[in-house]
Length: 418
Image (cartoon, rainbow, N blue to C red; front, side, top):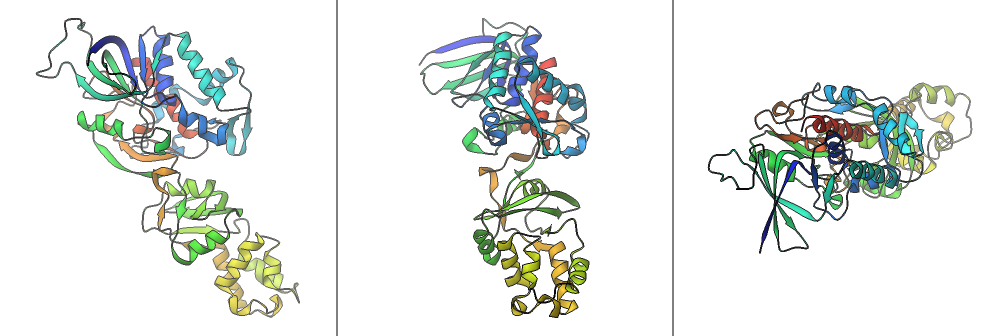
């Protein structure tokens, strides 16, 4: 087995959104840049995002749209590279896009447009990209006991070993700076892994607890059976948990509940917590039922509610909350029962058994503690030339283009300094 050595100003691990943006930015500064990607193609998560249309940013991005142990860490990067900056790049490449609900921006045609745009930008500044490369070692050359190579210049600070799936040759890359843009644990089929955390541990950076975020809930028992029967049914709800709430659509699935509202609140849910569903977020359901009772002689309660909620859901709620009175006319139901039903409609408490986990999670919450990283440069405080960007850091965005904007902003910031 042979060995080859190559030198670069910057080696980036990971050809996702943050890695590509880092490379473009550093390349524009005249840096010799290499991206190493372990999978067979670049930008896999970009390609699948937004249902294949890539929700590439949001018009209004604020720190409150992000979750981190340090709520202030993201501010500097987000101020340095704003949504308008990425929109200008999209316009430069004549990519048609459209604004949808909650100020989200999507490609009109395909998320491939975004990946092709980033690859073109990389090509224009001479960025080299190698796929099928599994990185096994990142070693600081200044570390005690590390022998310097004869062809190594004094400015080289890191030595990286690359293992290629289609080669028997070990490749060693010598670089002044290294950016860890490997993503995190979410959706492993798209290349998600914990390798960035391994690097952080190796360099004594603290890791905060990781868990799946922006992920559907699952249930056991009767609620799972109800969800299964309602699979495919959707409606607008307000969902709340741990002092956070979101007004968005909910979708019942074979396993439990999903949809934008549920994905959003899942990032604030912890095992054992309950969530509260307001099935009629624009009405005081108790007052509505009591007032309607006076005018709805002869009809059944399910008939009345089926005009406001999906009929299949109303039938399930009837079995839960007024099964013994299901055939009794609405006007004959006592006020105490209607008050109870109304309260449940505005505040249905459910306890998920678990989430669907990293298999379907859009983000990984937690990660590399930002206390060990400069918010101005994304550089490790204790190891000059080592940078962390994107999802590997303890910064996670809400649903709606915010995680991509963090990738663009953190990648751009690192690319300015690496």
